[in-house]
Image (cartoon, rainbow, N blue to C red; front, side):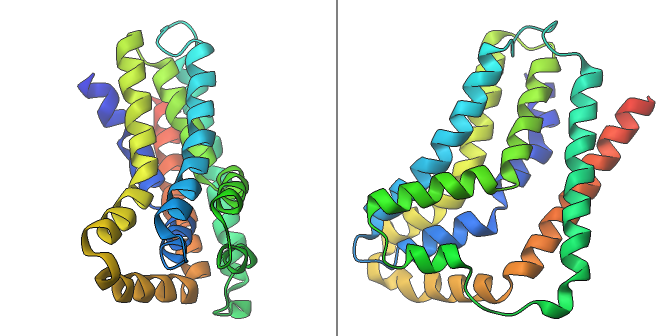
Length: 219
């Protein structure tokens, strides 16, 4: 089990570092219905990632013969190369970057819980974390883990994906209105640095997954 957790650490870190999820959650915590809106938004992400996890488990995660390690390494390498390509494309467009709110953030400003859930579903499916979750499940499927270990590994990935929401929501629940100033500063900074954060995430994790996959395939 410990070996599986170590293998999943890069994916878990990648799922935690999600600027769009954090910014959206912080924005909703400043709405008229902060907790319900933020929970609905988080629930959408959890639903999408849970479906991926359940599909992988149903497809044989926990059965060592279900997915070969070579296939898993190729999936990780492909995700890494895809991230590098997107990151480089964004980097080349750096001169065009402007500090303005993305359209989805504008939509969230007046969102109801239902609307927040729908926007969350769209973002979860368009988010690079979708591929990170797939990479994590491929690692579980190709490992020598038992079904119980596969379930624990999947739960750890889902927990990592929820950290972006649990921390802001927890801070708001504990501090109430006192948290608004800090949350607003965090949101404003993330809006200003939205593209730069995206480039850093894509290039950083793209390099990590590419190197890891390439080394594994050559060994």
